[in-house]
Amino acid sequence: MKELHAEKKLGPVLPNIATLLIKNTERFGEHIVYREKDDSGVYQNHTWDELYLNVQRIATGLENEGFRPGDKMVIFSRNCWEMLELQLAVMAFGGIVVPIFANFKKDTAELLINHSDAEWLAIAGEQQLANLSADLKVKKIYGFHVDSDKRLPQLVPFNILIQQEPAEHSRLKFNLDPDTICLNMYTSGTMGIPKCVQLTHGNILSQQAALDILWDVDEHDRFLSYLPWHHSFGGIFELFTALYNGATYSLESSYGRDVKSIFENWKLVRPTIFFSVPKVYQSLYEMTNDDKEAQDIFFNSGLKFIFTAAAALPEKLSNEFEARDIKVIEGWGLTETSPCCTLTDPDIKRETGVVGKPIPGVSIRIADDDEIQVKGPNVMVSYYKNDEANADAFTEDGWYRTGDVGAITPNGLKLISRKDRIFKLSNGEKVIPTDLEKAIEKKCHYVQYAVVSGSGEEYPVALIFPNKKLLENPDYSISPEEGCFCPRSLNELGKCLTGCMHMANNTIGQKFAKVKSAAIIMDELNLDDRTLTPSLKMAPKNVVEKYKAHLKNLYGDEVPVDEEVYIIELDKKHK
Image (cartoon, rainbow, N blue to C red; front, side, top):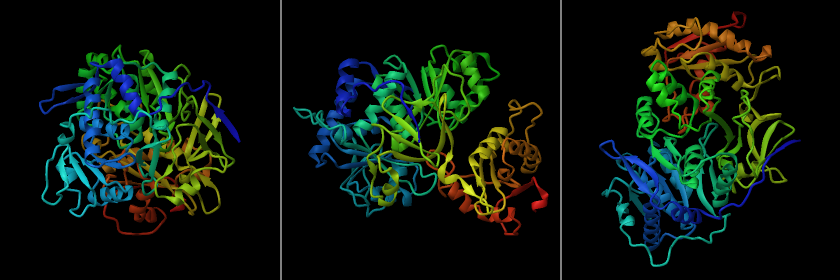
């Protein structure tokens, strides 16, 4: 097996979250730790002193109400000041935080609450309250922005905890062992039912000690942030990078949904560091492209680096940042690894698919079947209540099996695919669908999602989901390639995309891996039917299951379908 080890050694690691809080409060005191807009749209500032005092109050209040170290608190909320205070208090008191997606419907929300075995719950407001049953078995529900409900007598306002006077002696547990579990985080569930990952104080803080060696982040930095805290990218990687270094974290008021709002907040915050996914960077760039003043704001001189995950930043856009001496950093990891395992070196020319070298303390190896395996202080304890998943999670010698397939290159780890996405055709040939999916999505910005399927069939086919908003309101100012035009209907998109599909196919070396036909489906993937995960990633298995009638039609059947569809035939002899 090929192994790749960190080039720098991991130094001292803080033992627990309580220690992090007291050390940073002593260092930064009146420095602003967090900013959030009020109802009038004005950013309100919160200092380290305020945060630490409220954490002490909450810990005292929770203890008075019967909460004990090891107890679990589900937080069913969007990012907000109250959520930050509560989750840090629970962790620092020795409890376990279980964040879940704020927009989950009742079935999913209660499935996770019940699965977690939590007896304590906090909710944001009326939206979450409407998705709770009257017979929910929890001791207490704290409402951030809702006070009471006749159906749920255990619901009380969260402010009763803030109003507590801190105990004479701190209730925070400064002697907690680093191996104490403090966070149960559900995975995105891109390939099925979410798994509950159990993470420790040491998992989270070892990662920050490693990152501290690799990049320059301090109390003078400003984060503009929208990534949700129920997901590891935002809730562990980004949030704790800001907290650990004493930087100021400003919440983006549209939660990343509105590019105009992001830019307006960008003007107010002037971030020095920004964590996001490529589609948001692309949208911001396109919006500011024709406005010199807006571009100067977006590419502001204080912006030290941007971090991108989920997919590679398009080369053209990456070059725009690098031309202005703004570093572009990519990384790779999973919720199970807290999440970061590798980072790219911004001083090395980026390669598609290469996600860098291991961070200090982390080692990577490639198994005989090309699966990436990880070892380090960032690796989870186990999955909660999931014996089947735990049985396959680790090798006999203690390496975590990531389920990703990759290779080691001179510049670091190269990602190839998810192991369970690779399928065999009827002739036994293996197809890596992600290669073609990325090529299709990269070729046309009217394509929002693409999934390639064909397990057990003679050849692969593709389901393509267009960006309906862009199709209904074409933007003639953006065009990815010379000669590309802006289609205004599904029929126009189908004709246009036929040529692009041929070109995407040509990026695939093996003839058997090229798609023979594709269906452009005028429908939107969404959270409710689980075709999208809470982090807005496509859930391929669920997409294939929902649209299996379209797949049958691509293989020659004539099954009625509800959605408007355009069929692209790239190899008529197979039809």
